[in-house]
Image 1 (cartoon, rainbow, N blue to C red):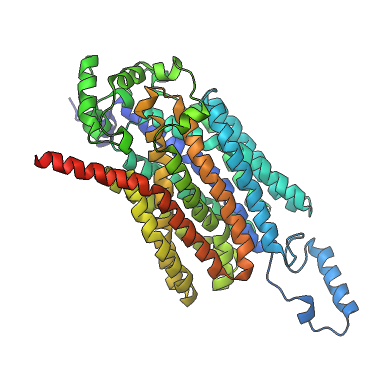
Image 2 (cartoon, rainbow, N blue to C red; image 1 turned 90 degrees about the vertical axis):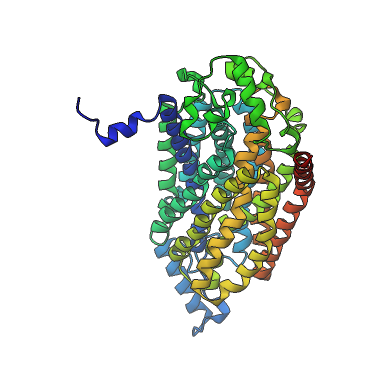
Length: 528
């Protein structure tokens, strides 16, 4: 018998379940990357909506009439003033651009609280598909303002509000789906890698928007809108919500530690319920995700998740019930300030680079992607460290503690030249996005499968929505505050971001203290 080709041997070395998990991992990665891809254009186009130009009193013309005639002719030719796209060509352009950010993020924050509650009562595939198609529509709608020569501020604000509301369908849906498919064994590392979709989407969105920003900024919105709509169709055709839907032999939440870790996970056969309970009790000490759930995982959780009762046989958790899960409030408030910092960079970094480095909108947009490159490594590093230390809160706290002085260095060093800006963008991106990525993925999934829920898998969407919804309040406040503060100087914006990092760390101190105390008690127990 002839030897199998290497490629076929590679394919057959993995089981059917492993291939399905890899497929869902990849699919949800690109689905949510398209969400961030469609959010990024506004930050790139800001430099085109308002261009730096000389004020009227600085223009030396023979008469005011001559100056007025010149401006009028320019407007007729280009449908925009020499200072940008009306109404963003005024001196208060930073406040107007901040209003666009605030409209989107405020709608997103409000909608997120409702999205999780609605999403856990509807099929994820349908809910996510509708949300992505609507997101494509409203993203493209903003760009149509260019082609239709619309200069009404409320048109753009309403497009942002509508887009913010429909984009809330994304995060609870994909986190719930990935939580169904992957267990707790290496959740920090797995979700740290998976959460890089945020940075990948930002990078792709920046590059796509920057390609057209100087020639036809309307396409900077229309093309991302088309992409997310197409991905919505892909979601409808291929997304599998739960392993049980295709009769996978086992699910991560009910399997042993060998199942959760590495290629050998499938070698362990799950023959009886007692074997599962024994494996879970051995695992619980090593995979505590929060201090309140580190001692044990109940056999009721294992059996109900294994049979799907948490998915089909229990009612959805209430909003107040989700808040009572230990750690939800602390991590939600921490994320509020962590996301404030991250989204301020997301929406204002290209404009800051334009002002400081004196680059055009396209080059500033390209350069800003380095912040997201750093964010990819930061998210993976945070997940890896938290898995190794088995301390989610302490890992976040450590990175937040380092982020504050790094932001101060960024505000100082970035004025010294392009090379210094590149280095600080990478470092700042890693430290700012690391805690944000860890809380929105691994921590949210940990809390959504907390032992107090007794196997109710339907709670994951609500818990995720509460945490990310609270974080989105900070995401709305950050760009708004940046728009209000930046006229007084960019240094003041960075001071605001450093204070926000300190507040995020403050809300985690209680959980960090409990983690350290538990570690000390465990060490003392081993010595005795």
